[in-house]
Length: 207
Image 1 (spheres, one colour):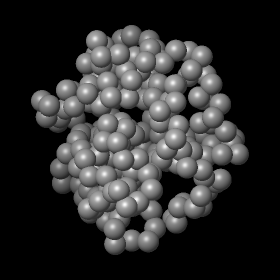
Image 2 (tube, helix red, strand yellow; image 1 turned 135 degrees about the horizontal axis):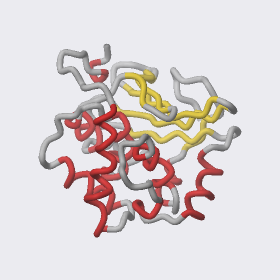
Image 3 (cartoon, helix red, strand yellow; image 1 turned 120 degrees about the vertical axis):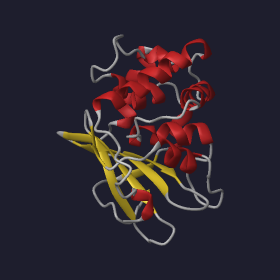
């Protein structure tokens, strides 16, 4: 698998992993592991158990196969999430794709903490709600939102954000009775990040 603009490793399409047990706890639990949450993060928050999470970790962090998750948009920029499985330099890279460019642009990474340029809640929702049926990648809007959620750097969330995130978590298998609390844990990481200055140029502009 090739993504023009990203030549760092042996990429493989990862979209089929999204429905397998253990994926979402592997992907999102790190957002609640930086001290922002009073409770110890648990895979059960995402409907997984420890064995599921461990088995999925072996797949996601395989140095010979770097899963890439494509989030194409019908009208405007899309995103690609890549597990960068360099031995000794593991991390997750976040790329944007632009309709007027032939290559992807890396804007951020996650290596225990977030670095790079993030997006506002409204920008995330726009990407999530505009899947491109003509391009390979994730079409489900709930999975799309959760995949790009680590890019969120906007502390000024609308009132509907928690409910939207809880609905997305339920859609991918998280226990309905606890998704509101899980959403709060996921948003808590914003308190430890730099605020999103509205004067900053959005990465979605192509700058």
